[in-house]
Amino acid sequence: MFIDEVKLKLIAGKGGDGCSSFRREKYVPMGGPDGGSGGKGGDIIFVADKGLTTLIDLKYSKIIKALKGTNGSGKKCRGANASDTIIKVPCGTTIFDDDTGLVIADLTKDKEEAIVAHGGRGGRGNAAFATLEKPAPTISELGEPGEVRYIKCELKLLADVGLVGMPSVGKSSILAAVSASNPKIGAYHFTTLSPNLGVITLKDKRTFILADLPGMIEGASLGVGLGDKFLKHASRTKILAHVIDMSASEGRNPIEDYEIIRKEIVAYSDELANKKEIIVANKMDLPNSKENLKNFKKKYPDKEIFLVSAVTKQGLDELLVYLKDTLETIKDESIYPESLYESTIVYRFKNEKPYTITKEDGVWVIKGEEVEKLFAMTRFNQEEAVQRFARKLRGMGIEDELIRLGAKENDEIEISGYIFEFKI
Image (tube, rainbow, N blue to C red; front, side, top):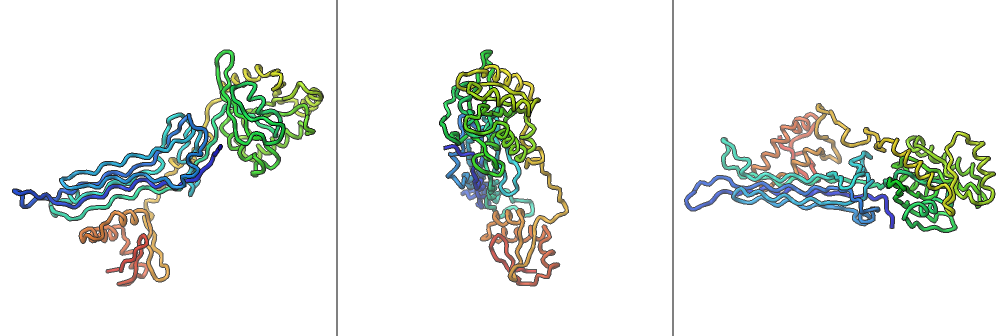
């Protein structure tokens, strides 16, 4: 089964918890703190694998969760870092943040990788909190939660040339005639239900990849028929080879067929519409082909047209040599503008508070990544940890902001779903 799009929830590994312990030996009555810190949680890493051609392995995963770091222990023993979770995907897979729509990574080369969700750091043990003023702290931290992300993986096959055109014009037959690919071929529409790739090897040993893309119909740019699948996979190609049944053997008009497909390409995207395009006039061995070709050339005198027959292999060698020669003149370019990449988005809101405070049903609700992370890493069964949590909130200006907004003594405060009483 060919699957080219999946949505996933990623949960990177939580950091290991820090340890609270003290050195206790027979001749060391006043041993100091020796609780070790926890290990780092596992990252979730996506790796491109040229051996894969579909995202079917991820279709039923839904949630991918990485391993937790090992907890710290006494004698200042640091917990082990968790191993990373490796997810293999086909070359040509783009990973989007499903919330923002930004590109996290576009994996086009074999073994290319990207950390998509980062594991949390390990919580510090009490030995890390020792100071001259407080040489024997009892406080330790819980591990930091791993990053949680909702992503969309979209596969756009890597091909140099895309064969495009209406159903049953002979795209699969051409691919079968020039490569070792064995696509399903039948005398009915939409025989090709998913893209087929073929490696073309010329007599001079040069190679390129040719894709037979699902047939289009009118309305394809809006998702009608299989056209949306075709358009997606055509985006990585460098040349669009527009295959037309010049014999009109199924009663269609070659000029109308071309204009329908061209209209859908333009409607889909400017980038696709501006790609190098040639016309492949197929079925030139059949009656009426020459007359229809004459009319086509009259309508489009400036188009580059190659006369071929997938059955007799007429003109195919000349077509392939031309395609390879032209490919060598076209530079590799990313299909996504730089502004769409998550890594290029720089946030500069230094004066903006790292939290929000709202009042809902009489409860003051505090939200913010920094606040929620602090909450998740605090051991509330340790008095020192609770005092540190309160100090941190004051340091962020949350207490002053609550008072400014009108919060009173003993008002209820909610952080990460837990309720506290406000103490001034």
